[in-house]
Image (cartoon, rainbow, N blue to C red):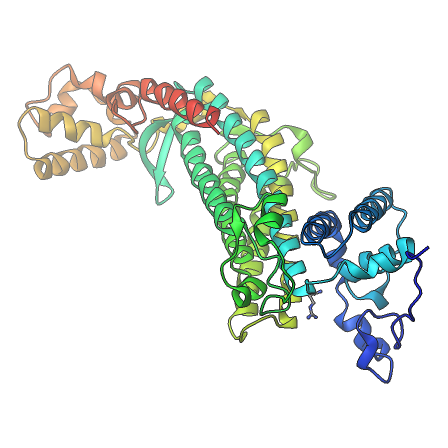
Length: 471
Ligand code: ARG
């Protein structure tokens, strides 16, 4: 049985690299330098990469067909054990790569030791993270689509629902709730396209770069690239093992997603307050207070807002991690994983929470309408009315400003002033002004692409639905 281990194992401890060492690694240093605690989550990608590498070695005549089959079978059996929770990770074996390789050799003998031919952990880990990030991008993209579809459904339902639109958080002009929700759709849509862009750039195979310079074996990098679903091999071996741009890009995409969700959260928090009272968040997304019996707190949006800082923190950590590294691989790179994994988990959780919560928000239309009535939201409409009757905009602005001041004094909205009251400020005002001063008239007047008119909201929803269907 030539497959049984017949040569001595490593001379120093359990490591796979102990040949030149004369004493075992210090116990603390072993723990300090080990990454298996967190990089074990890439085991599927690691195994996938190893099988592709083994197949390539067979094709190149470096492994026999039997050896390649034994390796692939052995690795898949290990994967099944890890899946089932029947695998013991060992800190002495440092990382996910050496834990799996060492287990493979334990199971299939000498052949296991041939797997690492023409490969280094440097190109191995670079491959694993790219595969991992690519898989996660696909999950995040699907979560974005789910949330965007939910926004489209509500936007369509609420295309006629009037609310105040704000600038400086002061009432500005009436808008429709549907239109407001479509603004969130647009932000998430850019997030989606940024993710795909990141995916496209990362989808090159570093496998074959080996430690840094390539390898002397007759490898076929195109074969492994294709096996792993990469578009092509990377062009430069030094860059291949040291590049973590893709992780930084994903962190930047994640930070923007979180920034958008954080802004969204801020609005939901304001809207659920007694002062705004624009929406109701179902109880299942809220918690109570242990002392104030009346409280219903919007914890989910608050946490999402809070977690946005954490993700942006990880982006900065990754940028700082890279900024002083000389070529090529440095152990610093091992520090990419915890921020990367945590930001991916956080983005997943927050998008999951939003995907569940958004379809369940209930707008309080009456309150939104009454709020839009306050704050002279149709003042611009009155100015536009005067311009259409021949006044210059600046003069119209001045006249409306005076009318608003009068309204404030009388505690009346512009639409509640009588025609003769309005005519005190400008005698060209006629009866037709009241259509313009109504909230409905105001939103309907903004009837162009990108405007808040209910028709336009419905048209935008239809366009966006098509965009999503094409994904
Ligand atoms: N655990 C390492 C990492 O995450 C794998 C690569 C180690 N390479 C090395 N030359 N020590 O980056």
